[in-house]
Length: 349
Image (tube, rainbow, N blue to C red; front, top):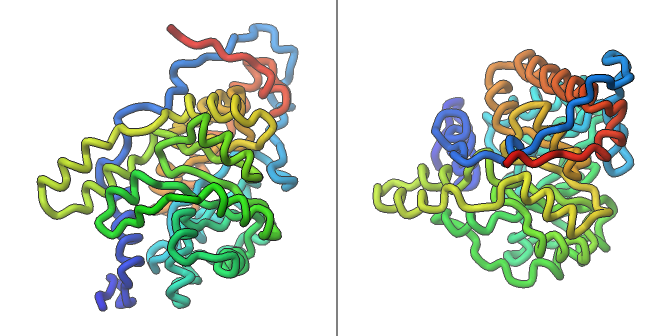
């Protein structure tokens, strides 16, 4: 078995997680298409009749209070190098009052020595925390018992089931059978003691998929659209032969931009809590996402890069996003997150 830089054994799954982490930090894996929020603008209010210092950014998600409508999106875990990053991110999430999701816990289910790389409750006892497993694994032996194990592993408040058909298709070791997942997801929604969230990993949720998921009984949807990290590019760069790289790169701009996925999902499931993630660049994008129907806004690549340097860069980054959100709310005359959700955006032609 291979060893990592610290002498830890590296399983095949763990090795893949290390490759994903390294490529996300070092390679050009960001989509060249945007999430689409630059197409929209607020109507500026020169007389907001508000005090900027009194703007209230607090909210709730799945009945859990948050100081900001932010989520550090599911990214990593399953490799020893990822454990430090998860703990740094969780420490900051706890202190600033936002939600946090760990990466896929499949490695933790199969390799108990890797479970510590996901476990952050000791540093973030009150944080809204999401467990994470691949939905396709329901066709490859994943059962309710393993889902409960993943939840208990980290003391999660909700379970994210991620959908990644393009990524699985491009992985040499990918799992390709996505048949019957809606029914199996629906069964888990009824059987598990905590809410089930379904998310994409960067290609977006369509209106049709959102309607199917709502009918299945999911508690929330993370649209996770095109505009951020392209897992098509990540998987392409994992290929060894140049011709295979080129074949995979043809799909690097495949997907629904996050803003479009958010609009479509909100139309299909207007009463369902929604998370907007995938290519959000700052707090103004977060404000626009909320006005388009999001209840929570997710950030991934930017906070991952900051976390590789330490806790303080993550804190500064999120403080900046929070300031941008407050300024947007102030100039849109929205004193609260609830008010921001009623503001109409204009599409720039």
